Amino acid sequence: MTTLSASRRSPEQLKLKIEQRKARIGIIGLGYVGLPLALLFSDQKFSVTGFDIDDRKVETLTKGGSYIYRIRSEEIQTAKAQGFSATSDYARLVEMDAVIICVPTPLNQYHEPDLSFITDTTHAIAPHLQPGQLVVLESTTYPGTTEEVMVPILEKENKNSLKVARGLSAGEKEFYVAFSPEREDPGNTSVARRDIPKVVGGVNPNASELAGALYGSIFTRTVPVSSPATAEMTKLLENIYRCVNIALVNELKLLCLRMGIDIWEVIAAASTKPFGFHPFYPGPGLGGHCIPVDPFYLSWKAKEWDFRTRFIELAGEININMPYHVLASIGGALNQHKKSVNGAKILILGVAYKKDIDDLRESPALTIIELLQKEGAEVKYNDPYFPFIGKGRKYDLQMKGSDLENLGQYDCVVIVTDHSDYDYRKIVREARLVVDTRNATKSIQDAKIVRC
Ligand SMILES: NC(=O)c1ccc[n+]([C@@H]2O[C@H](COP(=O)([O-])OP(=O)(O)OC[C@H]3O[C@@H](n4cnc5c(N)ncnc54)[C@H](O)[C@@H]3O)[C@@H](O)[C@H]2O)c1
Image (spheres, rainbow, N blue to C red):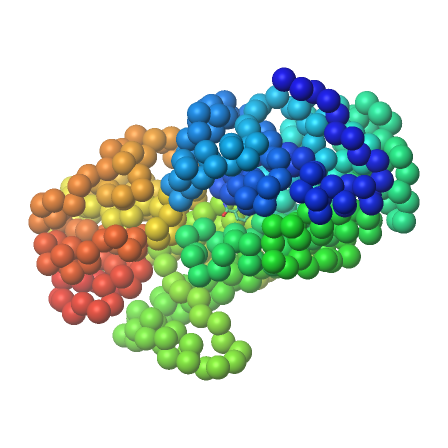
């Protein structure tokens, strides 16, 4: 294995290497964000090396396989033919011209930012840092992470006394640092990934220009901003906007249910306004790695400035309560049939956090299953993307998926995730009682449907 350090000197030379597709790209964290990004660079004829501490992922990729549903093995094999390889050996970072970090940023048990993946990665990069290298963080995080957390570690722990390039300097003993948030919307096929504009904020103008050139080679448009903190905050604004608006429609849904008004019909009508309204939809609760998590990164950081982010807290309160609302609705629906949750046979349809994706993280379905089990229900589930639910960060369900045969055996079928593959007419026909949290049965009129 070669361990030659990449020949790099000035920012101009690195920019030229990028333009000529000769720059070597290292991507750290080959998950839902990092692996597709590696494939985008590979598609544009860059030589890409992926780094991950998960040996199973490295092994799968090395064998030309994929572990992400929407990425076919053939795409990995094409990338491999283009020079893509995966490794857990950080020493190979010395070969890279640019290093992009896509590691997780979860919350800890106290609902505070867990930056350990970012700090672990930064500690691991630092000893291999080379002059002129570009390091970009993509993980969603609070404003200040890149400059206050990453840069000091890189400066202190590198072996060449390198300093981050600041101001207009372009010295030989410098490296470049930027932040560029990932903006992907999993399962959304309406926009090609390369057409999602890429926001980039460098520590200094050279870092911004280099990161802009790097992403400009795979994205149709880059959006330069004045600093990493601005780029970090941009990503949080986008996710908080979503979180708060979802909370708003979730709250209005609860009111509409009491008033006997169909919130979905209201949203559809409001959406005809050609300006000033963007539709958001209610659901059984927030899920995914981003919307339920990221806003709290900002709430936490805001405390350092004696500031309370009240919108975020209120939205969190409303959204966290939604699975409990689903539980109450199931109880109410069973009650109409003179049954209780305790002892009821219940099938949960869809456990992914949103339709047509293979991602379980923070899914409200998991909370709903746990709440139902606690109340004494006998719970089964079906999800075409998950034949089995094992152990996650917050749950340990160890459940095997059930098929969709004989739906009449269940006291209640609950639609939690509205996957497109489901035949909702058939489901309603065969089930005894259907609780629909997603309006998946909107075109079906049947007394056994309870919309909640
Ligand atoms: N998934 C999304 O849709 C999405 C969208 C926008 C932003 N983001 C953000 O992107 C970041 C990554 O998210 P993801 O969904 O790709 O996470 P993920 O869990 O799917 O992947 C992260 C990968 O990083 C690896 N890893 C962890 N620590 C490592 C280390 N020290 N060295 C090397 N590899 C390491 C893990 O093994 C894993 O393969 C997060 O900050 C997330 O908030 C995700």
